[in-house]
Image (tube, rainbow, N blue to C red; front, side):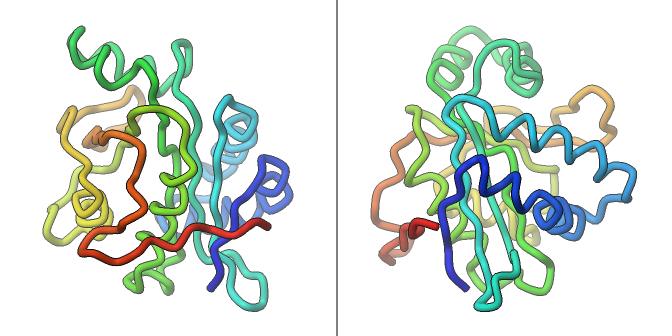
Length: 194
């Protein structure tokens, strides 16, 4: 597997693959995936957009992550803004990079790829803080929750409900920059240029 930085155009060229990985990782129905295609294409043009992908030796997409600078008027940003108090808004949302998507194909999960993708994305992320949302789960059993805790993400909101989604989410954040040193003393590999 090799990690590569993606430009907005790189992501859009591989949009079918991105949506397929997203669907497999989230176990979503095809009709939901079609709606996500449009959102992802819009996200690629937002300020501060950064993306990283994991490719097999044959060039198959095995995982990806992307985000951008959160600003007033963006749907996710507005939902979280309304739920936080004034001090938390100032602390977390003033100069915030939002990790929008981070997914690994199920057969590739459990081998450290999510950690490499997150590290690659956060080492090139602009902003002074980073926020993300993840479905609520048993933190000891959930790979996603263990990953975010490993990288120092803290709770901002728990059991949060976005309009139109019956699932509960945790809203997590941490300061940037991500230090070059990965957790447990291992050096993080920065993604190479594509």
